[in-house]
Length: 462
Length: 145
Image: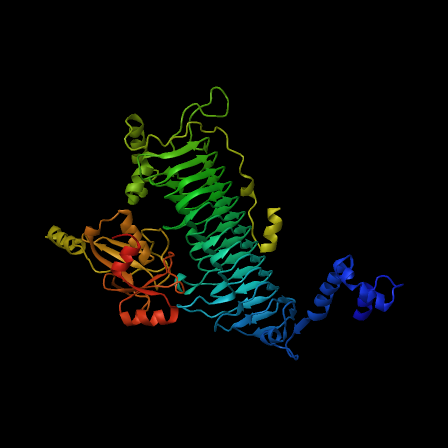
């Protein structure tokens, strides 16, 4: 068959004799025919050399390790539905690993389950469960070990120490996976998707729960975290450190032990995310520490102890967000400078803004404050009286947290009146000169509350 | 009589206890970076002369905290670090041996782990490579000296 093809390409002109054709060979090689020859070789290599290896229980090839040994670069390993007790599966060839009807890979709590050591590896449709755990080593369900152009997609991870672990890798993708664990305490559990020293990674449409940190970024640059759901994790839904130039958008973080932490980073875009139901003494919707030149836009912070806690935040744009029913919507510490907080909604929060400093060098402008009691005589939608969102009581609570038990008591009302007559506590410069009379319409994300699987989440976002 | 008893109780409970306080992993918050402290191979603690205790999730956080000037070196009675070879156990930071190794990363990015005994540090260095340092080296590295 292939010989027939060769002759067709090599001797396009049937009138030519064999000898004449050989004379023409150089012209053929560099001329029109070259494309034909190249096409032929591409077809030849992909159809003749790459093959499918089928792994199935109770057959000749019943283990994945065996299949990998038999495989060559470019091969596909098809794993039939079944139960495979294997660990330390090392993928050192550029192959595809494709599960049919979610075959189960059980690591029996011993060690790493899959370790990718080659570029261009593609994994789809498998279940990875019960990796080992250790206090000294980060053991993972699937480990990307210094590789490029690898993808894991549409897979399930149950009860692994670390589920997906990327170290020193670039241009890899982790998408449409469901990652679950039932970690009991933070010291004996690992992270759902863990990245360390990576670049250009995409984490998309995954659903992570029950790990220590849902998604963990340390020294990761130019990467994207899009449309993931991270909830019921013990510590952070997303943990983000020393990672410049990244974007995370359209994610849903809820019920995590301490919310989301973004630290020691510059140039991060946080857009269209939801931070919900993070309650507790050290829980924050979003904890920002030493962040600069970053954007926080169109996010929703709902029912958190603290919506955003900001320490050492410089040149941040906090615009068009909604803060709803939080204990504190915004805690801006005195070391935050040049931040702009504009066009946000503050609705039903116990405290809108609190600070520990009497000087504010941040700009508050055009926000909607439901506690605002001013009027709008010229009906331009902007209140005629400036609004100071820091209440005196919040300053007292900031200094002496125990006083919170006086909340909603008559003493606080009296103190507030006293403060209005003779202001002492309230920072003079922390003021919104153009408070909006109407709620600002950046609320479309709030009504759409995703539950269910990663795949449902995707349709929910469309 | 009762008031005297009460006073006595106040004295006993109110007097400054300056013993190290164990870190509650998963609950305590790092004084510097505000993170919940979870990794029991790492951690640090400062006890001030007044008996106040500050906890940290990593030795580097403790050093950075002192560097910010929120606490003065002169006010510190004791610097403690967690011995990486004996998780959760605190040891004198000034006498400890340190290892900086990329293969043994610490929570806050300095790849710094501490050991009470030099021999433990050597054993970890064998497994993870890296450089052995002293407390003074660490202060120099973080530009405290």
